[in-house]
Amino acid sequence: MGEISGVRRRFVRAAMNAPFLEREEEHLLAVRWKENRDEAALHQLTAAHMRLVIALAARFRHYGLPMADLVQEGHVGLLEAAARFEPEREVRFSTYATWWIRASVQDYILRNWSIVRGGTSSAQKALFFNLRRLRARLTRGGEERISSDVHAKIAEAIGVSKADVALMDARLSAPDTSLNAPVLDADPGNSAERVEFLVDNSPLPDESVSDVIDTERRVRWLQQALEVLNERELRILRARRLDDEQVTLEFLGDRLGISKERVRQIENRALEKLKRALVEKYPQASGAFV
Figure 1: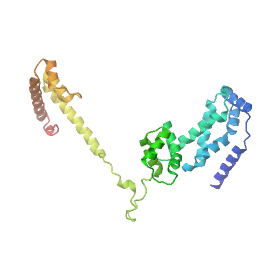
Figure 2 (figure 1 turned 135 degrees about the vertical axis):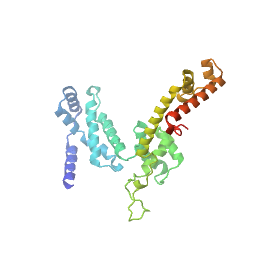
Figure 3 (figure 1 turned 90 degrees about the horizontal axis):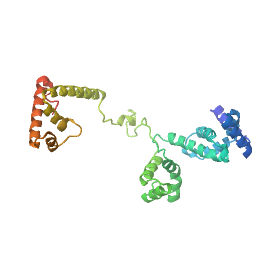
Figure 4 (figure 1 turned 180 degrees about the vertical axis):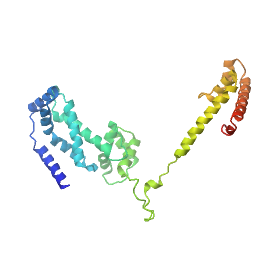
């Protein structure tokens, strides 16, 4: 651990001691990288801005993530800025890179700060990174729970819904709890964990397989039994019982040129024929189509 810390200190020291670049020198390095893919120019350009990466990463150290990881993610943002920078726009590279470095660090925090995702839209990011500051300012930092009125003011300030503010506030206020954490009320000798008390209401694997097999069998029985119906009976039964969008007796009567009462009679007769065919061919199906 001491050796690793020493390496990090040397890295930070080297970054802080890297020479500043004059505007013309910075512009020349950016042109060499963009037009010629000059790796030496890229290294010199990014090395001179690592102090910027460290400074921006330090602003987010209170989120509890390792500073080395924040700096590493900031360096990724710095390289992304170098890849996208357009020297001809006459903008200082540090100004352009600041946005990419901050965005990269913030994305890393959102992905790793909690197992509960806080959202990745621009509005949700703004809420995540500004909620504590606005909350402290509006409540003077002395309240653990904030009122609905404060939620509304924060929502208006950031441009999100009040419900989003309440949800994010709950996420930031409560730490993640491991499913392997012990249950405090349990007998110490049992060493019960939270995961043991989770209830899964979904069917067991053997039940799921059994349901699939039964469904396939019933479909096969029904398809074979439908062969006993004539064309008009089959058409009415499909339209009234088997299709996703079932139609009315009146609609079918108009389509077939008969009264809706006659359609009802044909439907009932078809159902009786179908039931008899099922029982005769498959006696075990008597209770399968209730």
